[in-house]
Each structure stands twice: as C-alpha cells, then as structure tokens.
Amino acid sequence: MPSHHTDILVIGWGLAGLVATAEAVAAGKRVTIVDQEPRSNLGGQAWWSFGGLFFIDSPEQRRLGIHDSLELARQDWFGNAGFDREEDLWPRRWAEAYLQFAHEEKRAWLREKGVGFFPIVGWAERGGYTATGPGNSVPRFHITWGTGPGIVAPFQAAVEAGEADGRVTILPRHRVTSLTVAGGVVTGAAGAVLAPSGTARGVASSREAVDAFEITADATIVSSGGIGGNHDLVRQWWPERLGTPPATMVTGVPAYVDGSMQPVSEAAGARLINGDRMWHYVEGIQNWDPIWPDHGIRILPGPSSVWLDATGNRLPVPLFPGFDTLGTLAHLRATGHDHSWFVLSQKIIEKEFTLSGSEQNPDLTGKDVKLLAKSRLGKGAAGPVQAFMDHGADFVVRDNLDDLIAGMQSLPGGDALDADRVRFEVEARDREIDNDFTKDAQIAMLRSARAFRGDRLIRTASPHRILDPKSGPLIAVKLHVLTRKSLGGIETDLSGRALGAGGEPVPGLYAAGEASGFGGGGIHGYRALEGTFVGGCLFSGRVAGRAAAAAV
Image (cartoon, rainbow, N blue to C red; front, top):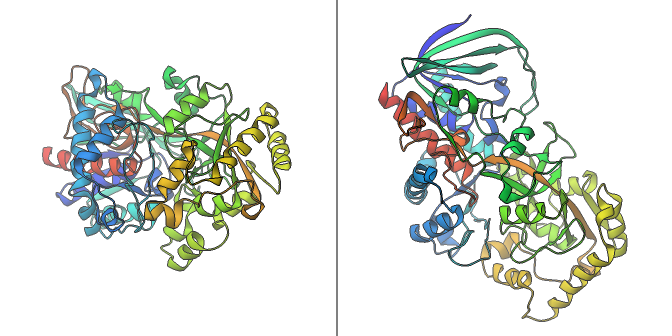
C-alpha cells in the first residue's frame, strides 16, 4: 500500500485547494494534493465557472458611476444572509472578514497575479424589496477576463511550479475514505487508489479501486467541494422552507461534486452545520451537448423576460428574472410543478441572455476582443445562445403567440399550460408599454435599470411590446431547477481550523471552499449575493493555507 509523509495534505484540487497549496508552498512547506478524478480536472468546479467576483467600491464600479461602500455592502450581505442561529457565530465573523477582504485587498492581490476583469460590472440578485431586504443595492458582479480558467490559472501555475521544484506532489485518482486520527489529532488520510482514467474534464469517471493508500501529514485541509452533483443528498437536505424537492432537476456541476468528504470529516470530529442551506437556480436548461450526467446550463437573464409558472400564471412581484433566486425557487416549489417558463422576444434574447460557464462564453474565456464585440454588441444572439435556440430541447421559437403556446404545450409537462392565461398575461403586460409610466413593477424596473450604463449597453433591452412583430420572433424557454451550491459545511474558525461539537478546534484539521460553506460553515447564511462563491474559495483557501503552514 503506497504511503508517504508530507507537511500539509490537501484533499481536493478545486480553486480553494489550489489556493491553499500555493500559499503553503510560498511559506516553504511541502504539500501533497489528492483528488479522486484524473488530472484533466485540475481546478475542479471553478474551471467551469463564469468567474464572477464580488468587489466593493472597485475602480470598475467607479468608472461606471456606481457609488458603493463597505457599509452598503454589509447592509446588503446581512440583509441577504438572514443569520438567525446559534451556529451562525463563525459564519457571521467570516462574513465580516470577507467583506473587508472584498473591499480592501482582494482585487489588488488578484491583479498582482495577473488576473484582469471585464470593465462592465453586472447586477445580479437585484432584490426588489426594501433597503434592508435581500439583494444587491448596486452592481457588484465583476467578470474575470478569462472566466473560470482565468481565475484558476495563476494558482495552478504556482502549484505546478512547486511540483517541478519537488515541493508539491499531485496524486490523481486518490479517493479519501477516512481521515486518520491518533490521540485526538488528525494525522492524514487513507483511501482507495482508483483505476487510471483518460476521461476528459468534467466527464464522469469510474470508482473502480485498484489499490489502497495512506498519507500522514502535520496538517490536513479538506477542500473537496459540496453536494450539487448528488441529487440524493440534495433531496435529503432540502429544507421545508423551499417546499418539496423537485422530482426532476438538471445538474449544474460535474458528478464528482458528491459530498463524499462530509461524513468522512464528521467521523474525524468535525462539526457539520447548516446543511439545509443551499443555492440552486431556477433558470436551468438541458444542455444540448452535455459533458456530465444530466448536465444543465444556467441562463444569466436580463430583467425583461415574462416569467410564467407551469400553468401560465405570471410570477408575483419582485420575482423577476435575476432578482431573487431563492425567493423564486420557494414560490415555484409551491406550484406543484418542476418547471416554469420565460416568454420573450428576439430583441430581448439578443441583449439579455448570457449562459453561465466558461465553455458557454468563448469570447470572455478566450480573451477574444473581436468575438466579444461581435457577440455582445452585434446583431443576433450570441453563438452559444443561438446554438441552444437551434438545438436545445427547452426552446420554442415561433412567429406568433398561438403557435408559440402550441409549441410550449407540446413539450413534456406542457399539458399543464393554460393557453388563455398565457395570452392574458402577455397581452396585459404589453398594454403597459404605451406610457412612460406604469403600474407594472417589472416594466418600471426595466426603465430604472437602463439608468445604469452597463445595463443599457449590454444587459437590458429597451422596453417594448413582446408581441411587436418588429421585435420577433417570439421565444419561450422551459426552465428547470438546476443544482449548484452547498451553503453549509464544516464549521471553521477564522484560521480555517475545523471545529468540533464543543466548538474547539480539531487538531490538525482545516477546511476551505464549499466544503466549509465558503468559510465558517456558511458565510452566506440563507442566500448568496452572487460573485461570492469563487471569491469565497479564494478567501477561505488563502486563510487555511496560511494558517496550516504557520502551524507546522
């Protein structure tokens, strides 16, 4: 059985694990990284991400006339998080620390590593309630130039440089099944060596064991991700406040995001908290060209599409596209159906539809300025969006409303749709366009959004009648619940040390990234402000890597 010793063992080579490793190597430590996947997956889930980052009062914001501040961001974060449990002690402290990081050091730290940002700041989770309620008061969603691969690159380079120097050992196809504990101290891990696999990035690999391994370490960092690829666990932890779990969902993360290290960490003495807090999207579509099982893509919608439930009723205020993810999820789960609908025009899809993920944004991922100008500012839908319009199972494109409704009804579950109700909702909405004033809150928000230069330029279509032939054809999109993030996890202190049931640190054990709820066991509370998942991996990985290095 292969066995060796290292200063620091990192379990999971996603972004948090890479950052932790890079920090530990910079401090002069020897690090071993293990992961159950083949090396093609180095960078983990972050590689597939859109690379959105949450900054406070950034130069990009200021150039666009956005007035942000630490005080406003704190108001938004805590109004969004809704911390209300005894277990929220450390998540609250992590939230305060992360806000400081996002306001002060985070951007400069990334810029020093060569990471750049798209100049237009996005406005995600717009809220629509009161000043102290959920949502971002201002745009804060900064897109990494290079998307997910761009944010992974400098940390992967640092780790691979350490590997070349003999300070880092990377062990693919090593699946941890237990943490070793001696005298109450975590001293490493043991598990199965899996059969070699040549699968491409993201493609599910086998779990055939061919050997066993054991690694001893002076400190162990768990950075193994969440549960979004495991629908059984998602349903097991699904909270009553979000209604009944869907019978069918699409999957927004690869199959290896399976939650397997949570019980392993708990068995070693770590306390798991806030497992019922989770973040799943309601704008999921089936990928016409899937990579992993049940592969879904999230639409990052602008605010103009009419959102209907499965029967054709329009969603209530303020559940508009891009305003309140979990509020919309809870509402839709009460309808008794697993899907909903966007109804929109060609004019809207050209301006407002972006698909989440590095592979769905070749212009930003490839840092291709010419393609960027063509796809974001040119005529017609962006290439990846057009591909879904042409091939996607959830898209209906027609020239008139009657034909559109018939196409919607022809899709699975479409028999629930009331054609008269759809017609009533769309026509009623269109009547509100004739004046510059309106009682329709969504239309009022559209006009307000276009006061922001970024929305007016690339994110929000000018208000128009959806049924206006000059804005057509008409488009309907069937939307599914798409699994994504765990908001709870291993409870940690501000040094990233895993805490036990009594609140004391588990000697030798640290946690980072989604495995720790992005810090503390749930830095987001009940809801996320977006752009905060990748950033949470960066921050918690940095904290854990530095603290573990200092301790050994």
